[in-house]
Image (tube, rainbow, N blue to C red):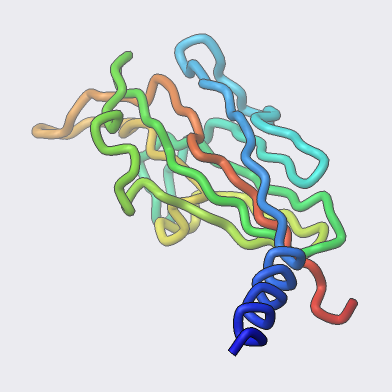
Length: 165
């Protein structure tokens, strides 16, 4: 019976030693004062980088929409998962501060060693890779709201050790 707790503790130790989690502070981006058309650094750590830029999508799945696109790069030799919640500011007010921990606001990307993935105007499916900013041309009934800022909250990276080592 005394071997069971020892085996359990050994298993937990081995599980945690193969994964390392790091929390990262991400700054607020004020889109009223910055308008990057080229990739702009958002967060850079020794393990990963996140960049963003503004894009006007006038064709494909995101037609008639201005969006903020994101590019994620794994800077390590190990696969990792980056996870966060988006804080969204529209017309100068936080539009989701009352519900920041909702599952709809939680995002993650999985990156292989040295892999880069980036958003583009071709798909609405990967919501982790973009934030809707505003419609470029309004039709009756459409809102004039625009994205004025964003921040990634609870930004974490989980490195997973290679199981072959």
